[in-house]
Image 1 (cartoon, helix red, strand yellow):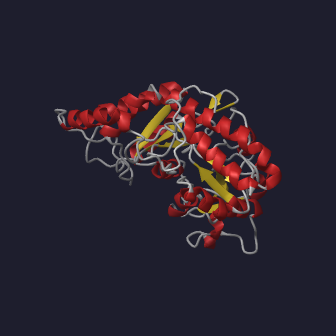
Image 2 (cartoon, rainbow, N blue to C red):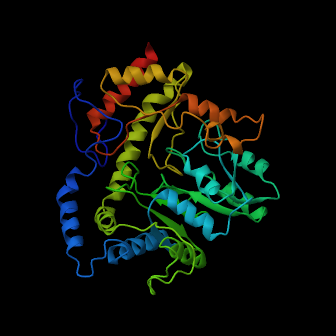
Length: 388
């Protein structure tokens, strides 16, 4: 493998070395800093462990870097979706169009507010929601469209923005996995009326804990989300509740740690992109043997997860496991086929591309602290399987 920008150096291929799918040492180089931030937070005179000065600094950092009107830090990416929907007044009987393939909160967030998730099929190669399927799913009861960026590809936000605008619908951008991605010069998270990020440790800007943010260009929407995240309090008058809200507050240690790591975020993204570029070079020739790599390029790409599509998924997973390489099958059932959401599925309707993705998608390691030797070994193992 050619030396790549952001690499930690070449290491010899070691067949005995385990390469787990989820890296166990993501924060190893920052361990001492994290411990010190815990100590400092515990000694702050006002004893603000949540929604304090560090949270405000973190919100401002993201707001300014994205050019947003407001960034509201909250308990998780899932909470962020709930806060957005609630702030928009979406509730009982309203319909929200969501992808049929993706993470459970896409359907759970509207359902928990009494709204109805309406499932649209995905593009068979990019695995993001198909704009034509979204347009076909709109009814007089539709209030919002909620696309999600998936694995390493951003959804077609320009087309989805057109659809939302032409139908006078809200556009909510689930960019939980896509922080740092840019489409046509515009960052993920700011294409819709509001967007979200998630900071679960395995995300591209993950941290050592649970957390998320609402991102919006609408200051009034941001103010409403800010009110809802803390039991409806405005942050000025404690124990005065203007709304029935939630406990979705952001941790000061996590805020300080994310501020600390923000300066190296671009380098980590660059490393992920370099690994993906190498994988794609190795895997594109495998298409005639039934192994499909994600679409290549950098525009609208985030490389949070690098997922292959193939009919013999379990065989490849076993092949990799025998060589000490972890792999992960995301979303083995489309959302409308999940027991929790089956009642929202249109009887007799099928989502063939989502069903195919659920049966054939297998993700391989792409975290930035893989060495060049690690990446070569993973690619070699996949190619060996294809040659069998």
